[in-house]
Length: 209
Image: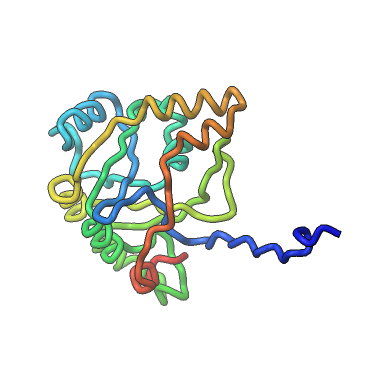
């Protein structure tokens, strides 16, 4: 009998349903957005959004590269042809989470619906948890964070939090080409490394749906 086969197999850690995964450093976290070329290319060139970028609209940032690919159709959807990797400060990201409200009503978190609507009206940020995606953009059983910024949060994002902006449209196109060719291992190797993002429990306590 092969003794090696008798060794207990360590349990596979199950991915929590609500956990932020992102490409991050000690000081920054990378989020993704997609824009029309006129805005996206200018932002990547200058390291900040151009004047044509609207501060009046809610802007959604996504730490998941593959969820961004799902949203923009691998950079093929109208006005989403330029994919940006936006590196922002950890302090800014944390501020947004602490000042965010869930985009939908959860009785155990909000009490009555009127209280939730009041929070939603005044919160400068909001959170959605949508199914994470695999390389074929099929939904996975755990969720990916989408963070909407408006008002003060959008202004802070544009003026204070951004450390750098990179046009990663070519990466999106290359990964997509590998997936279409059935080269999934190569596609996976090209993806940005997204690791669990360390946060104190209280930061997400009001945002777990």
